[in-house]
Length: 263
Image (cartoon, rainbow, N blue to C red):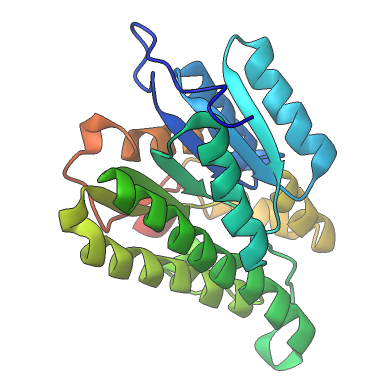
């Protein structure tokens, strides 16, 4: 397979000739971001543990005239992440953009009632997973002398989240990883930023509401715009952070929250 499918420029598309890797791309924000990169001309690597959803996302991109490759990958396993980057390079020859979106949010209890195994699962996916992805993405981008990485954090990475302390801690850690790496690699032609959405209409949010149905009305009321974000609205922000229009944006946490953190 090596060398058979290289990224080729296409006239008029902002990410033509670029290769974008999106983790957690089988659904939600990840799928919307992968689709958006595909429409914008990038060759997209769709990474997820969900095989059916991952293949479906890749198929959507191809059906829309784009190029996509699905790779099953567990971002909590170093071997899987290393193989993911290797497959990306073998298939497309380069890695220009990475959106580290895969995460867990399965918590709804006060901190004193927390579960240690749950702590390990959330921290493993949301912190270790992002760290492993960046580690191997950066090694490839350093060889190329360029790249853009977006780590999907949350408004819970900026403020507290009652009954979701582990999740909030993990997302604060994502912001810390982002800022630290952005400073380390700024002179290597690599930009690293974080994206911090509030409530977004995703399967993850739906599961959270199922665990606590009365919370939906309260959550919507906390957003001054009175609604949750569409996944496409978050995807648009991710694409901007990876674009030439954001060429001097580095180490930043971009809030996409409908005004949630403004009040």
